[in-house]
Length: 139
Image (cartoon, rainbow, N blue to C red; front, side, top):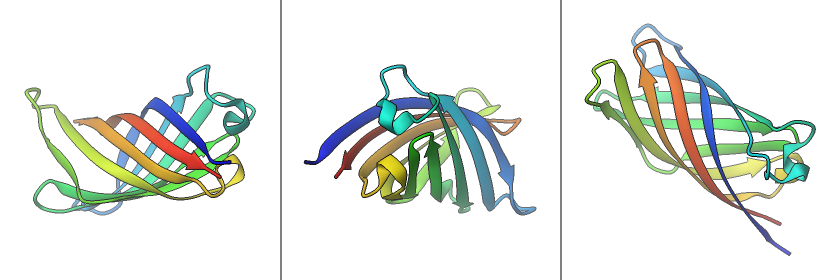
């Protein structure tokens, strides 16, 4: 029987340029999972970490792929269409959004499918705050 899983998390961390022009970025973030998160998927702790690679274009768009690592397994994802990153009223902070499709999973997430919606900020010190909302289906 297929299970539907929904969750919201707020990841924090840092963006690091992979090249001198900032066209490719590495993102490392982590979060504490909500206490009601499925224990079989959370594993031995209520923590999740994310490692992602971002390719920026010159018009504020980007593509991203990455992995969310939970105690009970991992989720791999990639952007469905181009994400957007733009200015805010605070000149020190940029605001962006992107939709990811789940492309695979391990452990408790084996066979997972679904989508993750991300709305995030990046400040002048490359600090990232990423609010993610997911709807997944597990076999």
